[in-house]
Structures are given as C-alpha cells and as structure tokens.
Amino acid sequence: MRFRPFVVPFASVALAGFVAIVTEACGSSGDSGGATPLDASIANDTGDTPDGSVLDDAGLDSGKTDARAGRDSAPPPRGLLTLFASGYGADLSVFQADPTSGALTSKGKLAAGDPSPSFLAIRPGGTHLYAVGESTAGRVGAYAIDPGSGALTYLGGVSSQGNGPAFVSVDATGQWVMVANYGDGTVAVFPILADGKLGPPSDTRTVGANAHMIATDPSNAYVYVPCLGADYVAQFLFDDKTGKLTPNATPTIATAAGAGPRHIAFHPDGEHAYVINEKTSSLTAYGLNAATGTLKPLATVSTLPVGFSGSNTGAEVWVHPTGAFVYASNRGDDSIAVFAVDPAVGKLTLKGHTKTGGTTPRSFALDLAGSLLYAANQGSGTITTFAVDPTTGTLSRTGAAATVPSATFVGLVWLPGP
Image (tube, rainbow, N blue to C red; front, side, top):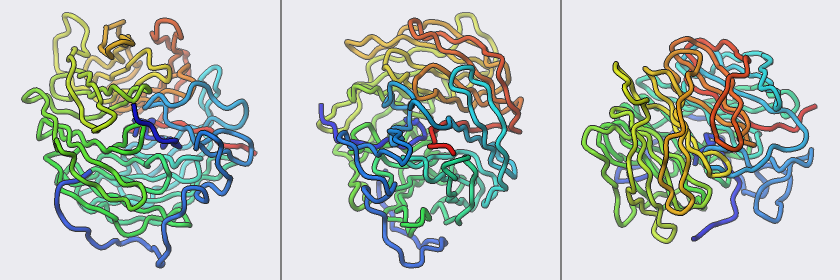
C-alpha cells in the first residue's frame, strides 16, 4: 500500500469523501488580488502533528474531518461539533450537534453568496467552507468559518468553469478546491489563497457526461470522477503541489450499462472503494491498486430491500470510520441501506435497511466517531438523526431532527469553540 501523511477534507467525507481529460484553463471571476496558494503548513496557522494532520489552537486534531473516507476513529475530546446544511434555497444553515444525543441546535443562517447552493465542502481544520451554486452559469463560493461559533462570512465566489456544478471537495492538503460540473461534464481545480478565497483554476477538464462528483483517494495522489451519464468512473493522477491532473494510464473504468455511477467513497485500508449507482440502485465494490490508482470491480449488490416495487434512485455512500460498514441512501424507498464489509476482500453483505423518517434522502453524513448518522431528506426538508450500533452498524432513530428546506447536503466538523 502507498500512503502519504494527510489532513482530511470534509466532504465529505467526508468526507469521501476525498480530474482530467483535455481542455484549457479559463479565466476566473473571483477576487484573487494576485495572491498565491497558501502553504500547507501555514494554511491552518497552527503547526503540524507527527502524522501530518494539523493541531489547532484548542489542541484538537482538527485536520481529520472526513468520515466519508473512514479517516478518523474518534471525535476530539472538546470543542463544538458543528453541522452545516444547504438546500438550493437562499441560506446556508449552521447547527451545533450534541455528540452524545445527536440533538441539533440552530446557530443561525447566512444568505448564500451565490444562487442555488447545493453541495458544500469544509477545509481541513474547519477554517473555511466552499459551496457550489448549482445554476446554469455555475459558481463556487468561499466562506470563512468562525472557530468559536461556526458562523459563516461570505468571502466571494468564482465561476465553476462549467454548468450546473453538483459537487465540491477540498483535497487533503487543504490547498485545492475541486468542482464537478454536472451540466457539461467538466471539472475544475482551484487554489485556495491566503485569505481563503479561490484563485484562477489550476486545471480544467472535460471528463464525461454528467460528472457527478470529484474526490481524492486517502493518499491524495489520485482523483476520481463518477460520470453518471457516461457509465464510467474517470481516473486521474493528482499533483498536490501544482493542482494539475493527469489522466491515469487507464483513464476510465466502465460500470454496467445504464448504472449511472454517482458518488464514490474509500475504505480506510486504501485498497477498496465503493460507488453508488443512481439509476440501478446498486452499490459496486472495487479493489484499489495503491501503486497505480486504478479501480477493479469486485461485486455489485442492490441497495434496495427484497420485494421493493416502485421508483427509486441511489444517492449517497459513506464508509464507516472503522471500515467495518458501508452505508447507501435510497430515494424512493427513503431508507439507508447498511452493509458489512468483508475485511479480507472488501466485498459487501447486506445487514438491513432503516427508513430515514423523511423523503428523498439525497445526502447523509456520519460523525467522526461513526456513532451518529445525519440524513438530509430533500423531499421533506428535514434532517434526521440516527445512532449507529458499533457492533452491527445498524441504525436507530434518536428523535433529533431539524428543518432545512429542500435539504441537499449535510456535513459535520469539530471546531475549537469559544
């Protein structure tokens, strides 16, 4: 296996949480002021820990913020567990989450700086948040996060270099923001400047129809883009010094015809990954060659209960921080499917389904300990909370809930607090 020390981006995840073919970089509409990308050791203004993560002023190992890739085993002992949510509306919502009960307390809203915010990403260390505006003329906005309260301040936005951006992520170094533009099948990589804003793109590429996600693997050496309309996952080498993308020797890995690969999540062993297929409501396990960065399909399983009838689409996938379980959401059955992972080969065995208590669960997220799961139900405009059984991985409602109109994204990060 090949690993680099890493600081984990949220978002997702997570994480995986967690880009190229050919085109030319276009101009940016952001206010960069000629600044340069922030050095990784300066980005959080705190200093490095021995494992390459970042220790913030409160003593929290806050660089590890993406449970999507299973890169954290326990929450910090103090600070604020903060939840951010969006939903195509006028606002971004902030909640304080109780790490024991899962209860959510509203900490306010901020009018989004760009229209139609859908997916968000949190910078390692929790200093900044980035949001894509899923409009025809796509945008990606930058926000500063107040470390004591989670309050957001809009810093400015840039063109996403494409149409209808559906996903945004931050690489493990915290220096690069990546965006997948669903509308025209393009992706872009942007440097994060010293003030948290985004500079002109370091790379832009046309990757395939309906690029739905862009994420680095746990080593931060490779980038993957599930292309829903092309029925493949595009594979790239990533240079985290320059922000450049190079097509892998095997540039794409095909899925089944009509599967519609949507999102990808990585196992903490660095040797397996999981792709949820939107159109066929299925989950494919892959082997991940750490030396080459290429995926190899192992097996595909349904995300639906036996006997289900009706319309359904797959949406989100996460790997538990321990690597023992994988979770996938169903929009139609309105459930989270729970799978056990065979530790030897990474294949999946269904453990059960839990209704999300709302409709159309487009997004969900695990807390960093893997003890709580928050589901964003777009259709009902709610966020519901579940306790995770540490032995079986199964879910049970805690009763905690919050309202976010057309909730499309939910993500968690530990902040130092007041």
